[in-house]
Length: 316
Ligand SMILES: [Zn+2]
Image (cartoon, rainbow, N blue to C red):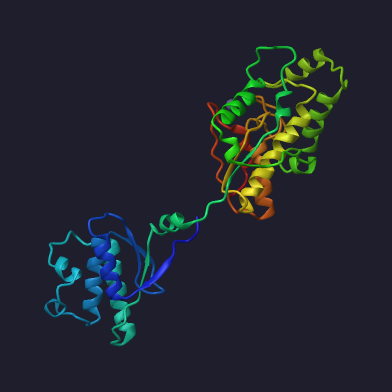
């Protein structure tokens, strides 16, 4: 989130602003002068603060001479006990009065918390992106046809998106394999080498018994000859989608990919996952300086323990 926009308001502007806010409970962020802290006040508190400041500066101190301004009208209302923020505003005004040696200028900076929303209305949006690769159906369990992590978990999503015309509305990102160097930002070389050797051993004639034996060492994992390459492909797709958003080419996007990633620990295959796609893409975005902090919203019936593990020691 960027800083809220600051604006200088004259006293008249400020009174108009209070009129705008009349009836709203929206907080207003007020800075009494350039060196004072920003106070978070309700409109009525701002109003009282303005009255106090105007009075303390000796400017229009007599309400009767001020005319029927909104400030004047409402200042006659009984007020609740002043808040600490209000007391601070008054104190700042008194300090300012002393410092200004009788000068009556009052500088307000209002931070409008709705400004971002107002600006967003005018913002030109970029297209939504999508990335997927139909080769991702190849990965399946060769010794259990009813294994829950199956190609349909991918193909049904693609079919439904096509039915709804959603894919045509998105900008397609060209799928690519992640490099081993990219994957190594999260996983040690031994982890990457292990998956490659398990999947590629035997070439076109894999030893299923040995593969199943290897899989039995992990929680909810199977191996297929395509698993290594498709895990690189899933990671590469995620990386490029994230990079396109960070580069401002996309407003947002979705990577429809498998194998999935969020249960893949740094050095352990787990829960249908081999390489942690999201963690890799996030780590690369952080390493490149494209993002300082990233919020990963993990959506599953299970805790995304491996994504948490990947950043557990990151002080951000
Ligand atoms: Zn899960």
